[in-house]
Length: 494
Image 1 (cartoon, rainbow, N blue to C red):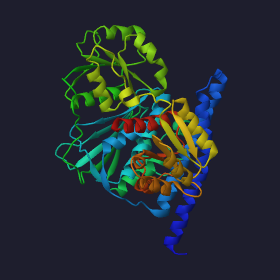
Image 2 (tube, helix red, strand yellow):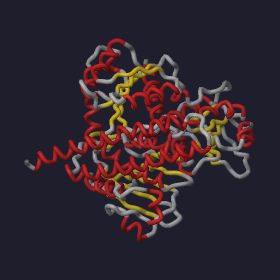
Image 3 (cartoon, rainbow, N blue to C red):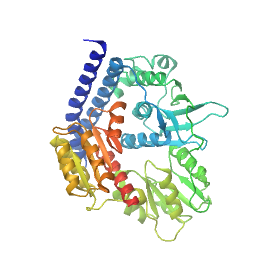
Image 4 (cartoon, one colour):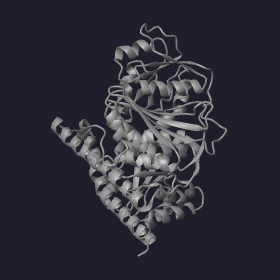
């Protein structure tokens, strides 16, 4: 057997192992996620939480071991395209936000106004780097939050991606061993991590392969800042500056974590607004308040007497919206916040009538919003349909790619969840055939779902017609937010 044939066999083996382990793991974590949303006794809640935490550790271990083995088997191949780093960073934040919210912390993005709108690089590898670094930062941060900071140093031909956390920080000795395989920075972290110390080694190899550099600044008790630096290869002349809607306003920020303050301040400034941090005196002159929903009802009511209040909530806190309105809030914004949502809500707050909340982007679906779930695994299909039906969607299922194509030909759907590995006809061919249908059926948003995700699989899925690609297992909040985003975007264009 030649070396090339051996590498091909090893790649197929890794893909099969990834799929066969992730598929039942998706069933375990998915069912635990659904169970957590039912009425449970305190003891039962503890049991479900233990299942989810153990499953998450196993998933991280699986990801790192397979990624490391894949790099050893086939090396690191790069496929460069024009990449919107701000968009990728926001997508990574949205996928990881359920982990952060479960710990009571924020994860968000700050993109400086002079940062290029696009760069020439491998989008799949950049996404992998960000996912590992941000996921690692969330794991070790218990208060405050994590910030992805995108900026371009002045008089430099480079761009920088900082991942900043407010975690425990690292000693100099720990930093010297951080990027070595099978090393964990601090022995006290072993109980938290439960991994094998491969995540940052993988990041280092990816950054080196892309011609970049990664550095770490940290000290005990002061958090950590990982900085990834790349050249401005293929940088567009356009930048990330936002377009303001309406007149400039003074936007007050109340009760927010430091990362969220920095993120929202940048969004406001780039659109020509003025962010104002709440002072200790409380007599700030603002046009609208953006306040944490966890503030005391009395404080929210006090703020609402000086200006309209937009409450920042997590997706799982939607049930508290009526209570927030009763406490004086004019509307709400969903974490993690997108700049277009913030700007639209700020503009709407100027009107006397109640604004549309974040429903311009996060509108609750109606039963007329139809989703096709194509997955040959009955447990995974049931998890997806139950999760989406609880959010108000109407779902149908298909067990093969051929059934999915036939279902689309017969019935109108607003979105399709397409598993990539199915019998009779796989998800790749099914997507190609759907894209060859006549309009408007050929433009239905398709989210490819796979238990084996790497940059090669992602590129192949997008090439076959996927609008987005997500890895199993998906927790309930992430699945709902992805589907809501694509169905609302589709209806906005209709």
